[in-house]
Length: 235
Image (tube, rainbow, N blue to C red; front, side, top):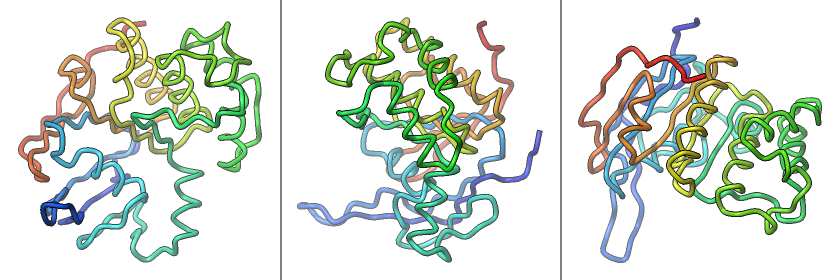
């Protein structure tokens, strides 16, 4: 496995204007994410977890500090170059599924492959959905699916083009306990297969325990980082 850094943050600061004043979401965060690793980011609501993912994924530009992806400094890129990296190299899973309402489950995945520049492979789209228990829902529109089913489609969509980096913000928040554990095992199995760098924000300690590295945030700062052996996947 390639152990060189995939994503690095160096003294990153990100703040937002709010009604009560300026909110510092990230306060001098420095982190290194090695290629091919799995990382769980934990912390209370509002501690900066989602902002961390946004900065890592070139969705947000930090106020100060440096973010590098595969050695490239994001600040040196044009907006269009950052957009190309997001489409081709990243897979995003948000708390909201963000599915395109007029496309079926399979078509949502196929569109992601097309946007990333990957040749559309409908058999792969179908397989990904089947592995998440959606065999009977391949050709349904998002409004014909439950919230949990839509979230599983969103997970498959984020992974279908085999991205180098997968960033997930509470990906199991709308799933029941059993489905949550199955979905995390699916994410980790895909990460192991493709050697992607997987970073997941979660409030669930049992989910965080499945990852090789755990990072805890509080008030925009790193308060703990633990690296150990990840438990074997349940197959």
